[in-house]
Image (cartoon, rainbow, N blue to C red; front, side, top):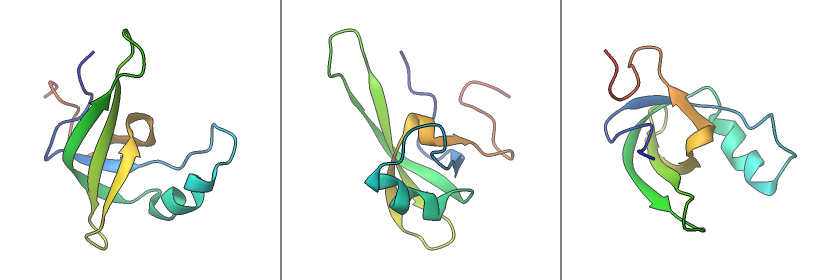
Length: 85
C-alpha cells in the first residue's frame, strides 16, 4: 500500500468525530479545518501485512508542525490527491 499523500502536498486537518473521544482529540481538534503542508511522512507496520502512514504537517496559520494519522487529514480542495490531475 502506497501513501495517500506526498511531501509538499496541501491538506486539511479533519476533526476526529467518528471515534470515541481520546486525550489526543483536544490537541488535534484545535487544528480541525485548517490547511497545512505535508513536510514528511513515515510508515509503521505493527503486523506483517499492515502498513499505517503518519504525516508531519506544517499548519499554515501558525507555522507549527504536528503529527497526524492518514485518516485525520484530507486533500485540500486546491490540490488534488497524489497521482490525480
